[in-house]
Length: 431
Image 1: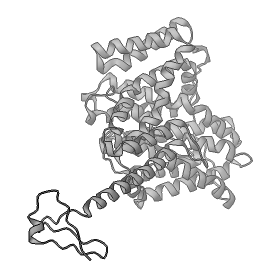
Image 2: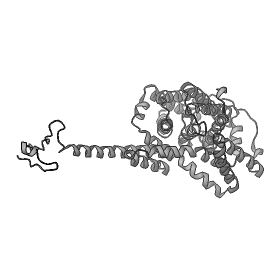
Image 3: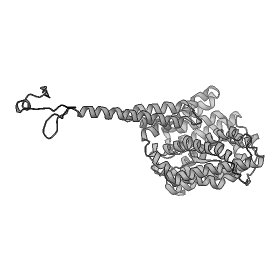
Image 4: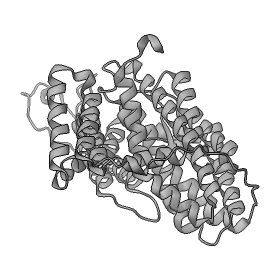
């Protein structure tokens, strides 16, 4: 690993963790609070999530030599904010274990792999582009409130892409940190060093909580997180088998749920950062960026609230800018891949638009519905093409004899004179 060390790997891993924590750590705090967690238990949640993601990122990336990033379930955490109201921590942990058991079963029995075989690469790329589009848009929208900071980062990125393309994102991040510190917009006074400690919570299994919390958590994690996570791998050309990855994320939850690890899944957005050409021009070495992300996740678990405070100290616009710039190449490549094949273009476009719309129905996010709508459109388009091909074959001459095929209850009779007729002559069929 050290032989292939590159600052771009380290930067991609750090940015992935920065984006992951800064975008949804507050939701995890809210979910823990909704279950009545004490400050020590909240710290234990952060410990369990950081350790679980760190170990699984490092282990799976090294095992498969692919940039496999795991994450906590952000939609799952949002679900828990409301679902855990009035539910004690012990019953909540029971629901976490139930959800993780179902995820593990999906991986062990290969159900998820069988589902993913029916998803064309064009749709996987379209869904990825739709998921990431908002990061590209927020890059420029953030200029409204922090023009100098974001514009300086953007110019740094463009110049670095011209001169030092491999280090464009690390240099952009450094420029943002330097300018933010110069402006005084990075709030270092909010940071205090403290170590997280695990707190074991004895689970309780209530049928109502298992069905009302555990089952929805499983569905949301699989449909809104693991499905896009595998799609990101496929869209970037990695053929890593899905079932073992799903099984290991579920097993991680089974081990760490009693400490607050409510749900682990494959990452999509942060994984795309480590899979981009900016992480490494050579796809087979990008797994090292995911390994570095795992190292930073371990640090977030050990330091707990200290890391959360550190990320909160950065200006929101700086985080949006570095995320958008780090994902520019992935967005462009995904769109090109999604729209490359004319026969699949309409379905891919529908998938992209639905995913980018942010549509949420029945608790399932837009990534799921984008894929569902795209698959439906693709199947309809395929049936139309099949019908046209079938119609084209009716009335075509037999390649061996040159005779016209029989119609419905009608037998074509071709005389020797008719067979010698000039090409294009219409031959009448008699009853």
